[in-house]
Length: 181
Image (tube, rainbow, N blue to C red; front, side, top):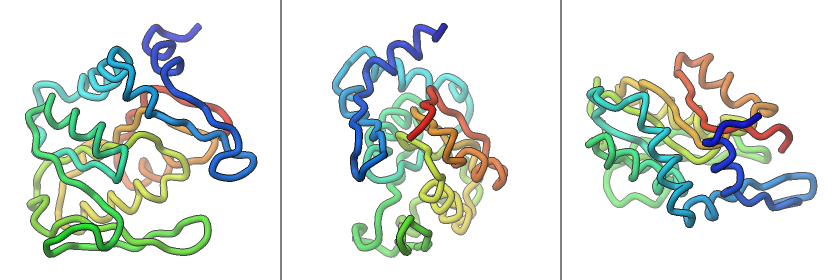
C-alpha cells in the first residue's frame, strides 16, 4: 500500500499518454503545482532531509526546476541559481554540452552563480534518462560547487537516470516513482 504522501502526489500528477510522441506517458506536474496541499507536501518532503544544514544554493533546472527550486531555496534560506538552455542568461556564463535523444544541446549558468566550495542541491521535477541532470552536475562542478544531492519529485526508474547521478557520486532523492514511461 502506498503512503499518504505517495497517494497525495500521485493523485495530483496528470498523466498524458502519447506526449510528446507515441508510447510516452508524460507526467505533468502543473496539476500538482496548482494543488496547494500537494505542492506544499512535495516541497516539505524535498526540504526535510536538509533542514538545519548549511545549504548555500539551490540550483534549479529550467523550467519546472525553477518553481520547485525557488520554493526549496526559500524554505532552506538558501540562494537560488537558474540553470538554463543556452542563450537565455544575460551575463557571463559557463556552459556544458549534453546529449539528447537526437543530437546535442547546451545548458549554462551565470559564471558567478556559485562560488567554489559552496554547498549546492540540484532540483528538478523529474529524473528520466538523467542526461540533463548529469550535465547540470558537470556544470556545477566546473565552477567548483560541492553538490550535496539531486532532488526530484518523480523518478522514472526504468530509464536509469538515478544510476547515472549516483555513478557521479551524487546522492539522489525522489518522492515517487512511476514504472514505465
